[in-house]
Length: 219
Ligand SMILES: O=C(O)CCC(=O)C(=O)O
Ligand SMILES: [Mn+2]
View 1: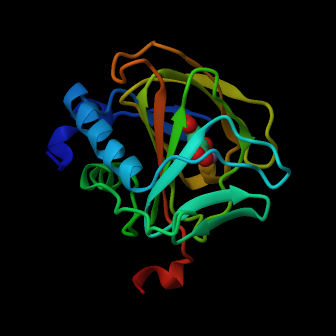
View 2 (view 1 turned 90 degrees about the vertical axis):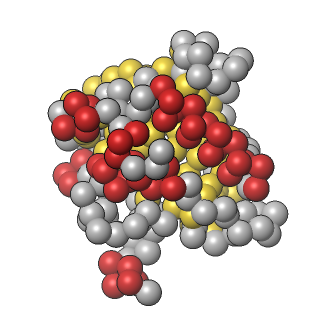
């Protein structure tokens, strides 16, 4: 079950749209979500979750790891992509089921080079930011929601505000591409226990990204 047969055809064909962000609501059926959770558990076993620290020294409330050729890192040194987990192990490969979602919605021939894994325990959030550490803004960021509902806030591309908000639910897939690639966005809060997907509650967010510049794509 790694192809588009594991995706809801109506959600694939008719995404909602908010400030240019396409949201395929309910794209992932329950069986696909459960299988993805198994895939991500394996990623976390290989590359354990970390508690990231911003360059300013503030501990983020989400915990993070990654799969793919690159993982996104933040510490006192700055924001960047790295080829290895801080423990020294290479990031595990992007699971085939995750890659199939990219292939269905991303609208580019380039392959994702990073699958950032965010874990939201009760009370975790993510402040408004732009995803700007990647080398090819012609490629979208594809965001997969699993587990608890999350209040996703979307701002402008030039300025963070004004914003609009939408609840992302387990199985929703958002595509930040085209004019919305540089939209400010963040997660204000989650509704702990709103989904039965993860025992004990919590939310997993996966974001797929192309990291290297266009010319390096074929290398
Ligand atoms: O958790 C989300 O829905 C968004 C995550 C995000 O914006 C990021 O990892 O850059
Ligand atoms: Mn982001």
